[in-house]
Length: 505
Image (cartoon, rainbow, N blue to C red; front, side, top):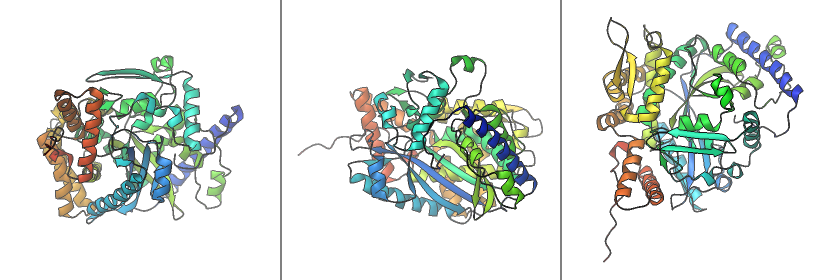
């Protein structure tokens, strides 16, 4: 959805023309796959992080336009709301000390951005959902002043035809309504890209789906919204409900939501793009002049612009991506599961765990998805979002007997998945020092049963016990989080609670 979109009105002929064009794009993709036109193995990874702008009081600041003007770097972009930014790290080849290099690049980029934000009395905070957000912050007037966001909001609102209902029942229950998709802006994530060949795409995507719950269990960092303590990772239910084009009647009929885990293992990237066309009406029926089949007939590479745009409005947690680099088409798996933060070390540890694990699982002789029902993978994801580091997972039983077993997420990670991730990283050529450092962070989170969500919740309750009001406790927790985030030690080492006030005199 990062392409420039010019706002305008759509009529019936636009939608029919767009549907026809989508089908031609899908046929074009099918031909590209059949003709083996895709890039050879590159072992390329990419990283995007969505960020929050926060004042010294811990409250959101609606200043992304001013901050981006000061940053003046193409690595930083707007995101949905005025308190959001996104940083994009250029693709890197997996191997050697790549994770240490990524960490250093991110430290440099975010420190620079934070200094520039400081010029307008704001700062950068990486956190899944900013605890101090209020309903009045997440309204359409605070959407970024960018055509594509305004247009997307208008189209989703029109498709739904009524207010959005937010209803999340966790530690506490939140029920409210919204007239726009602005609450989705509360969800800030880390997006991990992996370029794969068509022949490996299905195995990597299936592996990524299988471990999505585990990623959330160890990486949850979004327990609060609008002053309520909800799920350990509240982004998925919030994202689904705040972009839901289905009124209750369509939900009751079983119509699929646009924010979607999926419902089956796949055998090709084509399966996912074809599902997008079959299940989801166009939100932005904007047609490109290119005829993809004519371009293919002439030996060229089509942009498949309509297919790419439509794919950007279907919010899978593992999304297929079609792209072109240096005139050669490629496919990527975009992993959208993880919340932002807490620290750069934590973000890189989550990335190392993911890249190692999906490689190892994709290469297993008896792949996990042949032994785990898809419904169990979806249930694992839901359980991890609710319970975080304390979640229990269904996983294939080891040994010859087959079947599945229910196990603590931390036990599964420590006993079975971390050794697999280490082997997968070794397969990428990652040096032992990087493997030990970053997988060690995941192991310590499991050993201490601590992640960003558990720290936030525990610190908030300590603040309440100290006599602070709920709003003051959330603001104090956010300020303390920001301090520790900038110090940079991984979250499992953070002391719970607020610092003791220094006595005067």
